[in-house]
Length: 90
Image (tube, rainbow, N blue to C red; front, side, top):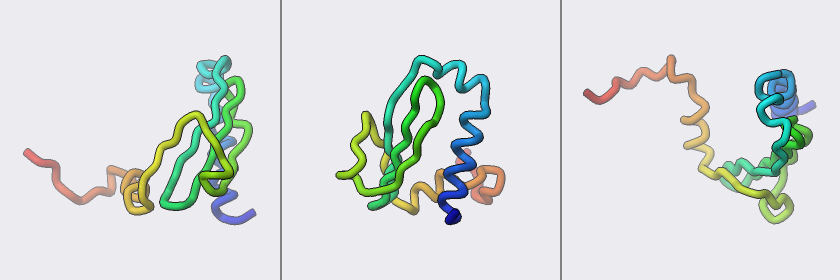
């Protein structure tokens, strides 16, 4: 597996191994996309379980909704807030 594939497989495992999350979503099925610049990752949820993760372009991967941002903004979003050295405004 490639590094990104490893991360996605681990994400899928963590989501599906969370009994509370899968119990709450057991009647929920949807496809949604996370977009980073030109890269589109579509997630398929079926009856509360993450069943598929696909990477491609937007035209190939239709979804019910998408969350999109630039690579720079996603990197800021993923950063651990405990490591943020900036001070908060007063």
